[in-house]
Each structure stands twice: as C-alpha cells, then as structure tokens.
Image 1 (tube, helix red, strand yellow):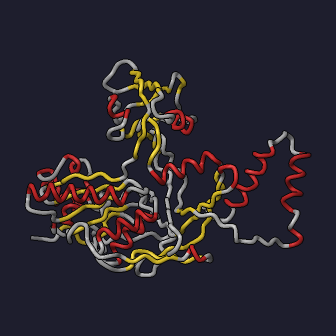
Image 2 (spheres, helix red, strand yellow):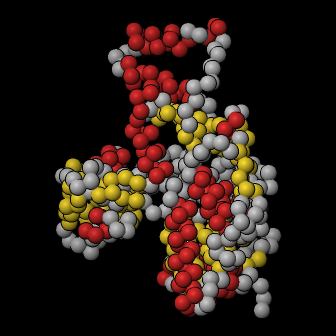
Length: 426
C-alpha cells in the first residue's frame, strides 16, 4: 500500500510513567484535505443554533474553546466506541505511545485495589531503576505534592520533563518503616515492549506488552539472544512461548513485523474501508526468525487488536498453537488525523480481517487450547509435579505458562466437551 500505516491499540490496563495508554483503538497517521463534507441543507445551521443558545442561555458561562471542543468530541464519539476527538495533551500521549520514547524517570505504574499508585516495575536502565525503586513501591508524593487515584494522569505528567531536570519521589515500601524519598534526574527513556528469557534449555519465552515502532527490532534481538543461549546450552532453540496476554495492541506495522518474523509465506492481515488508503493487504516475506522452532501463543480477554492480528496470522497460517481464553475482539482500524492547534481526530476507517477472511470484531479469536485453570484443575493436577520440578520461577508463579510449555514440548493437552484440559495418557 502507498501510505505508511502506523496503528496502535489502546485499552486501559494501567499507566506508564511518561507513556499514558488511553482507550482501545488502532490507528495510523495521515492528513486528508480532499474530503468534502456536504451537509443536508436544513441542518446546515443546527450546530451553530445550539452553540448560540448555550452561549446565551446556559446557566453558567462556558469558555468558547471548551464549548467547541466538547461539540467536536460529542460529534465523533457518537459514531462508535473507538472514534474520538483528541485535545493536544491526548494527541501528544498517543505519539509518545507510538514511538515508546519520552523523557522521564522510567516507571511503569498502575492503580491498585486500594486506590494507590503502585510501581509495577522500573524500566531497565532508567533513572528509577538505577536509584533503586522497586516493584510494589507505593508513590505517596511527587515534589511534595500528594498522589492519589484522582491525580494519576497529573502524576504521570509531572514525572516527565526536560532531560537533566530533577524530580523528588516519595514512596512507601513494605519492608521499610518510614517513607523513602528519591531524587531522580530525568533522562530519555525507551519503553521496551519485548522481554525474553529461557524457561528450560532449548525452550524460550517472549513477552510482548504492546506494539510500538521498535517492537519488531526488539523482537529480533530477543530471538537472537534466545538462540545464542540455546546453542550454548542444548544445541538449538526448540520452541518459543509467545505471551500476548493482556496486550492491548499497538502499532500495526509492528504487529505485521512480528507476524512476518515467524512466517515464510501467507497473508498476515487485510483491511477494507471507503478511502483508498484504508484498504490494505499484507503478505509474509521469506525467512523465519526462529528457524522453524515450535511456537505457542498465549492469549486472554485482554489480548486485543494488533495482538489479535499476530495471533490470527499465526493461527490461520498453521504456524503456532493459540492457547488461553477468547481474545477481546477488536477488528477495526482508526485513523488519527492531525488538526489545527495540536489537536487531532481519531476516526474508524477500516475493518480488518485475519488471513482466513474472518472479521474478529465483537468475536475475538478462539484458542486452539484452553488454559483457564478454573476449567483445568484436573488437568493441572496431572502435570503439577512436572511443572514444579522443571523450569524457572517464572513458570512456578504462572500455572498457565507452565501448561503452555507442557503443550509446546509435546505433553499434549487435549480439548474435549466434558473436560477442557487434560493430559494424554502415557
């Protein structure tokens, strides 16, 4: 296709310091000036009439900019659940999310059940990690300004800033009696979306948290590292667990790159829309990054949009086993169109289809193997001994991952009508 497409799916699943993930959608960037918008004659003045009445008669005075942005927001959000008007701050967050680069302290945070801002993890190599902040720390204040659930977006903004500038974070930690204050110097941060480790000799694990512009490159490095580790240990990489659970999506080009990395040929994804640049078709190119290693892809209800593209491409091309729960079912593409004064509109422009030609909108992708431990107690009991004896702490803390590895290695987990998970008898 002729237009560089950049898509990102966002689904509220926590917040990244300096990288706010907003509401679910995929999108690419483009500016269109050739689209006339004819209005029905009797409605030409409708919006102007309403605005005039609000200006003159509403009980409280409303700022003109606030009023017009509200009208624009309402106009777009009435179209569907994913289209929306973006003010300058929202548009800026989208661009940061797409690139994965910002200036800040390098913390991933989320709101916990108690309404506290909790550190999920410091990002490797960032000021936060170097200073010693830990997963589970509760952020009390930033520069002596208290933090709570009503100020998390402001908290994220205040942690970002000019490289070289300083910010004070006060946290509580379970192991400490008193709060700890850290003085951090902001720097450039790259949000790594890919992590990898060896589960067992020859059996690798790759987690993709979301898709941004560097995910394809990061994946290549991760697979190369696993292959090197496998050669040093067992002679080669036998299989990979690709974890897309709770991955809300991201840049479409990255999802295509990840799919293409494991496919020698076949369709990856296609899309249909009214505009020429809303219709596209991606085919895999030669070369399998994993050199034919077996692959199992883990998914759940938080696996959405761009991550569903990967799961669908690998499933329909018979390249991987999909394991887990039914995915979210986000099968539409939104185009982000820049507007004046740093604003933008995110507009649904396409429906996308898996290689089999299916739309997953509202349906999701059905896994080949279920991994829900509530449905698999009997099956899990049968392999629990093997799981506790083999593998890393990562497996021991994640029963679903243990089952996925067991499937990947050939201790087949089967599906039946009465028993979703079980183990083939010896």
